[in-house]
Every structure is written in C-alpha cells, then in structure tokens.
Length: 166
Image 1 (cartoon, rainbow, N blue to C red):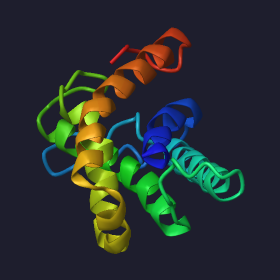
Image 2 (cartoon, one colour):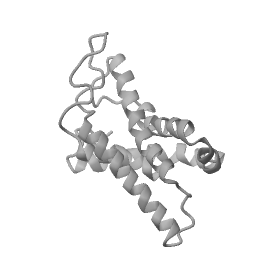
Image 3 (cartoon, rainbow, N blue to C red):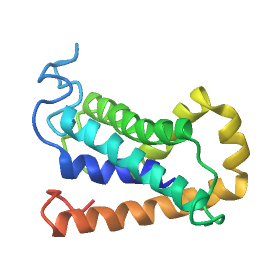
C-alpha cells in the first residue's frame, strides 16, 4: 500500500497552483472539487507514489527484501493514481454535502485513498489484486490506514503543509 499511502501527503506538499476544477461550480452551485485539489498536487502526488513503488520493487528484487509484496509497474501506477482519484471523488461528494475544505469527515477522510486505489487496481489489474490483497492483508490495511493517516496529517500540520491536523 505504500504507493497508495504516499500520494496524499505528497499532493499536500507539492500542491498549489491551478485547481483541477478551474474554479468552476457544479449544477448545485458549489465548487466541483475546491481549491485544495490542484494539478500540481495531483501530478506530484502520483509521481511520488510511483517513485515509492519503484523503490519498493527495487528493494524486493535487487536487495532481496522478499517480505515486501510483489508489486508490478502497473499495480504501482494504479495504486498511486487510484489513491488520489479516491480523494477527488471524496472531495466531489463532500462539496455536494456542503462540507467545506478541510472540514472533518470521519471514515471518508481516512479510507478514500484505499477505496480509490482498490477500485482502480480491480479495474486495471484484478489478478494482481486477488493474488496480493488477501483477507488478512485487507484487515491490516483497514486497521493501519486511519493510524497512518492521522500521523501523516499531524506531521503535515506541524510542518505547516496542512492547515488542520486531521
């Protein structure tokens, strides 16, 4: 899951610039995604996730770290892009519900990246998904994700990358 966990933090770090929705509103009069979803953040986040996945592949194959899961270049790209697409989908729904940027949305804020990553991998590389994401692994992902999410957000807040610690 490292290629899926890295993009959200990296997107916050590299973000800024032109919003993905170009400042436009949806038919309900609310922004499509909001100012927090930018091209620079999306591209930087996916790139960072892919680089983390490539590093994981190299560590497994060249350094013999066989405890790492067997990733493929395709699975790495799908996990990284899926994580941020899940975040975009959550932001779209969040705007429809009238929630502001940075407003807490428990559960959705923690698992949007997992849902997005899993959905994209299931579409683009289902064989890898079913070979790698066993029920036990899925349970660990469900347990660890909110803890890692919280830790990353606190670090982001303390370093000034995020405006709120959640």
